Image (tube, rainbow, N blue to C red):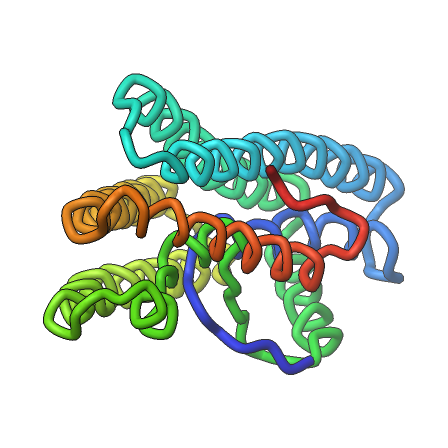
Length: 256
């Protein structure tokens, strides 16, 4: 599996690994009792349902954020409500992941847990978890690009102001490190929930920082572009968004 790492968020990690080991343990021929298998299947089902609901809530909130940023005049009430939805879903996903890890250890003994982890590693083609941004997030972070701005007639000195902010990259790298630390913590049978919650708090703080940095960029865009340029830019972004949604999910319609 060749996946290009473009942007890191902990909820994509949850989407990849959350509940996977519970379902796998129930399906494979591990030395576990029928009672344990039933408990693992129930845990996997519950975790999958909770995760799916929060992931969909997060996706809808990010689409709402895109729509809010598609207008020249920002609706602050709508923005704050959307940020709260995004933040709530992100934190819920982190806590669901922790709940799942704690529950696994209440079902499996240490040797069973280690055997399961070993099987998971063998089944994975890549040993490293890759992270790819949701299309709606990637668009807000990367667009407008240099080519778009040049086509709009934006002077070079103004275009420089809209180039990627080093602080944004720094926050992403910090988020990536905290994510790796949390996954490493979850790889051990002896799990300190207090340490996990501290890492979750750090991750959630970085997620909030990314939203703030994203917002500062949106305000800068509006201070540089004229209303006419902004409207033309939104037409280009909608076209690019439709293309990315088609590539990422052929059966899903792009938001209008």
